[in-house]
Length: 461
Image 1: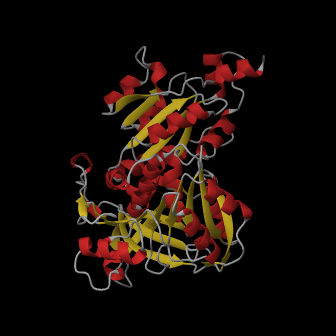
Image 2: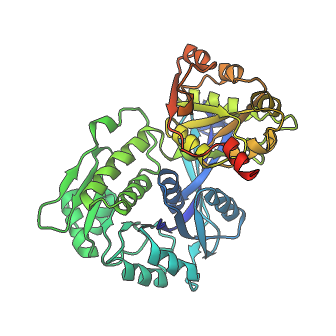
Image 3: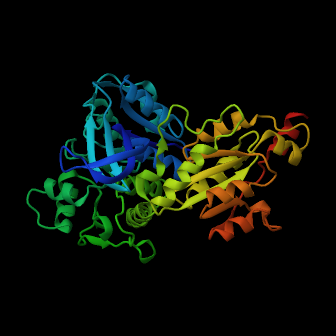
């Protein structure tokens, strides 16, 4: 299967979360009592991560990263989901830190002003672009989209490969022949030389940038699409089922979600109109589900790692409390997760998509032996928990000793408890606990042919 390629500027997004109940005595500003620091790939890194967690094809990310601590942290986060083709960066990696109290942003601190160096590209960049199913250029004005050699390659493939270009005011115009450009309304009006509305700006920018189409994003109003024919631009509204009704929505990452959804649809063979309709729907649901903050992981030296007893529940219960306090939706799932395989990953990603945070409850070694026999587990609880914690779709891990996780669920009180569809034959012993606390039990489809038992049987033949 051909890869999807993302090109653009990666940065590190940090959310410092806390509560503010008093003012500073030296100045009329709130005092934020910090409860945790959460990190995620930002900029084009967010677009690449969103694409990787929502699609089947491999995602290759071409970006510039520094060798500083921020660059190393960002590279580690990206490596969980995408293949990174690294370009050199002149200067420090960009970091954007939001300070938030009770879910509301208080201030943002930006550090690092690195730009992509114009060094020769690695040979693999040309190969992946020649073989790409579709390309997303996610420009954040830090030089990757302006790289002369990259622009020549993109110009060469634009006639035969779908290219979505998400521009930035500090970056260059798209190369000629782009399938669809996706500026927001402010960017389109600024680039249009005096147009007074989004529809006129969409058509002006399409012609000026020599794109096949321009989709100007309008937030909760959807998008305006100017296509290649002579018809007037059309408004693509947010579907009724995806309407944004929640208060204080965090729209961070909405444009990245729009662009990544559009490129995925084009790669699947959709025409431009259908791709934009899908992108509006997907971005709206993304914001309603919590936006980019739902992809963050806690930035601690030993995030979710088990202690000497194999239990890492402290962070799981802290996370559950934080999710409840913010009025968000907590999802939990559980199992042995011995010999982590594609079936497990599919279940975890489906579970994570049902809410704002996912806690995985893992059977201890003794619990697995009682369920599976004396030869199991193959992998210790400590290592199973550590592997699960490294997945971007997993927010916390807790190890339990019982045969069923009822006691853990009494404390977590998840909104959704997820198990694989192979449990459809009978009532789960922990279901009563989940429902008593107002949660629901959801069974998701499993991937045929994957189980730890089968893998072990095949390995021993």
